[in-house]
Length: 110
Image 1 (cartoon, rainbow, N blue to C red):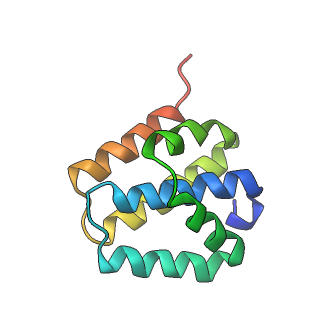
Image 2 (image 1 turned 45 degrees about the vertical axis):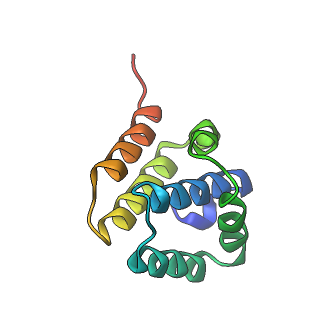
Image 3 (image 1 turned 30 degrees about the horizontal axis):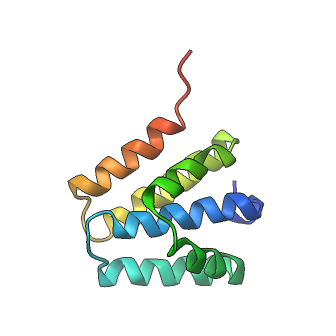
C-alpha cells in the first residue's frame, strides 16, 4: 500500500494519528517536526492540509476516526509509519500507549 492509495478520509485519519503521535509525550521534538516535514514533502499538499486540520482535533477524535481505514494493508502501513515516527526521538510510555490503542482498535477478535 502506498500512501497515495488512501482516499481523502483515510489520509485525514493518517494525519490525525501523526499529529496525535507528536503530541503524545507532551512535547514536539525537532526530530518529530523534521519527520512531519518529510511526510508533507513525500505525500504532498493533500497531506499538509490534512495535518493542519488535524491540529484542531483531540486524541479521542483521532481514535474515533480509525474505523474509516478498512484495508489491513493500509492499517499496517500507517502503523509502521507511526512507529517509525515515534522512534525518531525515542519511544516513550505515552507514545507506546497511543500506538497500542491504535493497534488494538485495528485488531479483530474472533
